[in-house]
Image (cartoon, rainbow, N blue to C red; front, top):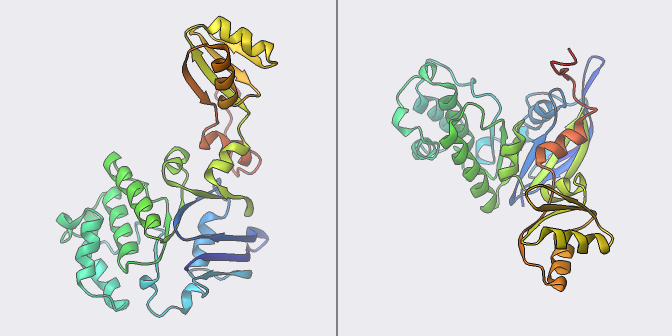
Length: 307
């Protein structure tokens, strides 16, 4: 089983501690979203994991070994940190071919990766002619080149069009279903909510959360149900008699504080009141994330009215 193990990881730049004693594990078979405000230490952690920077203390192991211990690392770990890294004068195919040769990969993998990333039609074009979205696809193709067990992607949706965003979402899910270890850094909360199973959240270099996505959202949600009935007045009265705090909206929907949908549904059934809609209200991933990281953002703008 191949996991990413971050063990008491610390990185200091002069008097600034970019990463502060981080410890967490990224497990295979699921997509782990790697979240945090600007300056939280996400990119630094990824660079440390890939041997692009040296930790002040602690370590990162991938499959039980440092990344630098692998003599053909693309076979084990695929990564995208900077879509601008490819040399602009090379064609897309030549860029991937150079990576394949250096990692003893067969040339057929180049064409397969180009197909998988949806850029086979532009394989002979020079990278400097590519749009940001095309460069992003090329970077993802490079990450997939060695058919790796571990995939680390930094902002993979950046620059992609709607079709590309759907593609990367499905790709991440497919990789996890195949038992790969997938770590994805992103600032797009609504997009992360569509593919992540687990979350690791950083703030000012420290670990703020390491938890399954549903648990993270539930921990920052208030216990509340929303219900709509053909007889909202009667339902509201029944809920109030049962001790619930009920807010009745103009459209006939009732918001029931301190209750779950299952409780409301059982009460409505016992009273013989038809129910048209019944859901537990939860905050979005974005709302939960902002609540957790409110005090850890390095940059915070004021509203126009405050300004």
